Image 1: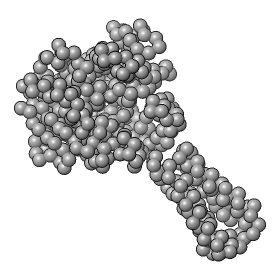
Image 2 (image 1 turned 45 degrees about the horizontal axis):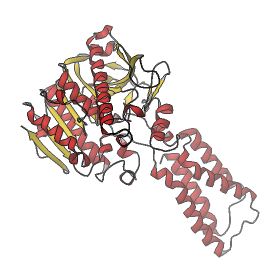
Image 3 (image 1 turned 90 degrees about the horizontal axis):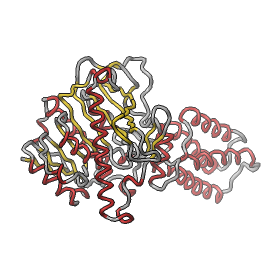
Image 4 (image 1 turned 120 degrees about the vertical axis):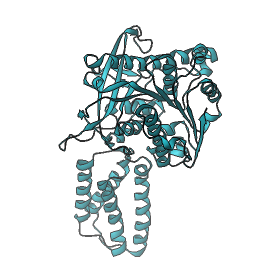
Length: 464
């Protein structure tokens, strides 16, 4: 809870207990004035959020009761009942605030401040296959994070999700929840500033590909942390595979459920064909980013391309995006290293999987994904490679632990948003391995801790 939310709760508790302890209500209008004043200030200072509806109602109800009630004295049984029922009522109405708090994104672990900017890419040689208007040119929205020199008078930190008015309802409704359910995340700041002067010189590039039904900011803590360690990090929104993509002209591309239909509805063969086509689309989106960077400062990335060292380029992703990262590095000469978090590689065609993954790789897998046939397919690819692979299992985690989902609610493990490993520990483990891996194989420094005894809860194997 935020400061004025705590104060409003405290004033409501005091308004309940004061008459119970003193045996009489305060002079008419005093409690009402304090309650309404604190409520109004909470609105002005912090903003409305739906989890506080109950608390707002309690505050207004007690304020109204204070003004309308003529009898100021309370007999003993009324005092006890008022205290017990009043405190229970306040506890109940603040439960949603506890269950769905303002999300706090883990801070970056590197020495640099981070800035971010977004831009659009258009592929005149790529035809859109999904959405309501297939046959048009495919467009992408990408977001970049980079180490920057942030002035003292810089604008406030950017929000976690810039297009929350679209992405929030789309994400909530995709899980069968009311559209307003994630509105409170508009109060969550990232740890990045708006566009700011970058440090001079070329730096390594890391491209991130999100999973099915997610979006480019779904693992923003990873983007910011890598950028704070000296990388140019670029995350791709995959239109129609992302829950929602908002383009610069205001056009919106919502998730296309037919892009990856339910296998029970369409059959295994149709599902497999759709999965292959979608993974290839994700992969070609990543390659489209690489082509844009290769055009230099006169291309779509402008000045950002001037800081990109394409001889030190890594790709990683989560779930379907992890599979796309692997496919891209099987085909793309520019790729120097690859990593995947629960990377879904089964949709990669057998002819492509038969190739050699000729770059250092790292695969981090949650408990359920280590039990899937997908893990065996991935293992076969790894064992055919003559390059070093870091094979990592994180115990007591689930698929969504590799996104920002674990901090969405203290009830996350019961809601299936995370496993039983504490969120802070999951974030620390993933950040540790991502930074150490890219430092060793893109920067050529550090990385010693990659081969030391793994942290608690981590299964580690070095191949070969």
